Image (cartoon, rainbow, N blue to C red):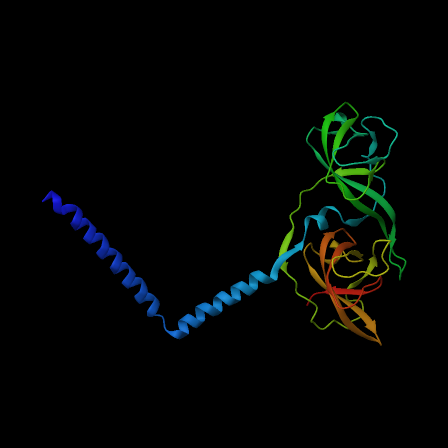
Length: 276
């Protein structure tokens, strides 16, 4: 009897495989054309959805852009190169000295955002003042702390970093995946709805997709991070939608935005409205 056991087991295994294949194929052939078409349609929709979703806000947008700071005076700043060399320009991984220390609450390992404070920002049309331009220039990590001095290492610089730049606590932020809503919408013709572009980097008189700008709408106006807005221009006493943008930073009265798409170059004074 023992000699027949392996053969019996083998036959049972083969029979099980055949039954499983017949059942599986039967399920496949049992689908009617309508069901097959529905599954294919669902797959196509999912593929299109994932294709449209992409990074709308990147790490560069978060840590290398600019915003408007209302008060120019900041307390913590870079005072010298750690080697006390007579040079102002710092490179990645360079060590520099800070004018604050243990008595100010600094600890090893703390991360700071480096800021260059620039020009005054105002509405070029109305003259309303908003504060000063703050350009993000990189990050720094505190590595050594004294009583009233500390040393930090420059990490991931954005452009030039020099002695005299300021430091503020670093806040980790995440990028944003999403769908570009475009600008195929009708603008509101009501007076006073929305705001306008009030600042672009000094090297640009006009900007297009991928560039940053500042608008005169902020948290007080209900503007939120990741919000998309349309861009309009007054043409022959009628508003024409010419592009759209996404908010990458919000302050009390202003926001920094990135242009997502546009059909013509943008300029200061172009109107922005909530994406309806």
